[in-house]
Length: 247
Image 1 (cartoon, rainbow, N blue to C red):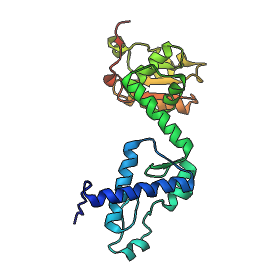
Image 2 (image 1 turned 180 degrees about the horizontal axis):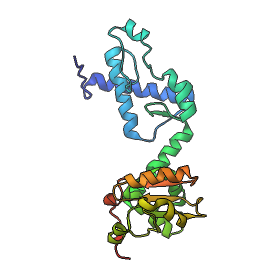
Image 3 (image 1 turned 120 degrees about the vertical axis):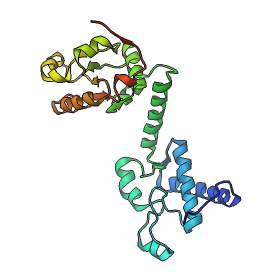
Image 4 (image 1 turned 90 degrees about the vertical axis):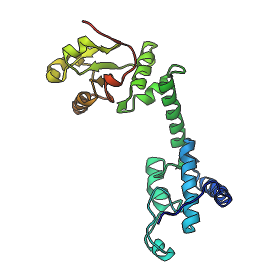
C-alpha cells in the first residue's frame, strides 16, 4: 500500500520546520556544511520529514526502510540520519554523505565552484576564468557547451589543450570543429599518433561523430601515459559551436 503524504498540509509543514532545525543542529554539531545545491538539500529534508511522519524516525530517504514494525526496523539497521556510514566513512573519505546534504566545508566550496563553472559554460554569460577552466579540465566527459567555452578560453590564453578529431579523413573534410588541432583517425590511430609525440603532458580533448570512437581512443591514450585526456560526449553531432569544412 502506498502511503500518501500531502506536502502542503499543516502537519507536513510543521514537521518540515522541525527537520530544518534538526539538520541545522547536525551541521553545527559535526562541523558540516550544507550542499550548495539547494534543490538537493530541500529534497532530502522533505524525504526526512516524510519518513518521520511515516516511521516516527528520520531515516535516510535515499535508502529503502526495511521492516514492517519499529522493532523490525531497528533490527534491520536502517540508516537513521545522520547515519553511521556517513559519519565514519563517506564524509571523511569523500567529503559528502551518500545523499549529499551534509558535506565538509571544503567539499561544499568545491561543489559551489563547480556549479558556477558549469552555469557559465552552459549559458555563456561570461568567459570562463582560469580556475573554472582548470575545474572543467578535471572532467572525463565534456558536453558541447563546455567544449565551446573551453575553446573560447583557449583563445584568451586561459587554458591549454590539443583538440583531436578521431574520425576519418573524409568526415574531417566534410565537417569539423573550428579549433581542431589534429586529425588522428581511429583506423590508423597508432601511426597518426606521432603528431602528438612529445605532447604527452599537454591535455587532450578528443571527439568523433557520436563519442564512441573517441572514448575508445581516450582509454588508449590514458594507458599510454597521457596525463589528461577528455572526451566530447555524444561527439560533433551534439556540438552547436562553430564548424568548418574543406582541406
